[in-house]
Length: 156
Ligand SMILES: [Mg+2]
Image (cartoon, rainbow, N blue to C red; front, side):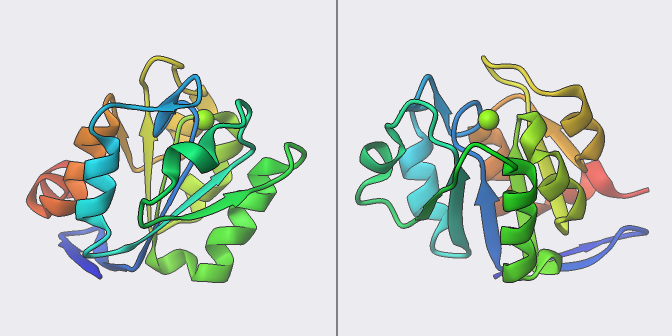
């Protein structure tokens, strides 16, 4: 568990990371360099879930052997599928990470929503639903280990 206490924002206990795959952890279906190690390190503190339509059909092979729960969901109604998934885990204990329009609802309802602008860009609506916007998945995952950085970003 990762505990955060942010002035004028609140106390949060994060038990789960729920991440999108393409545009977030991967580019064109291939994991971004350094992500595998970052996920291994992070998994010592928090449960990691990847929910994806798996557009390129590579997620299972790319994530093989990594300490993550992979959920491949049909492309229809992804925004609601992702929202339902974090609600089942308990949205108050979830940090959601994504870039696409279908990530907007989980980012909005999670205790902490991180939007990423990397090679695929990000949906503007998703940026508006986020608490934090980052330009690198490695830096975003690092925020969860260096919670003072998050505190500095989110405090009022
Ligand atoms: Mg995406």
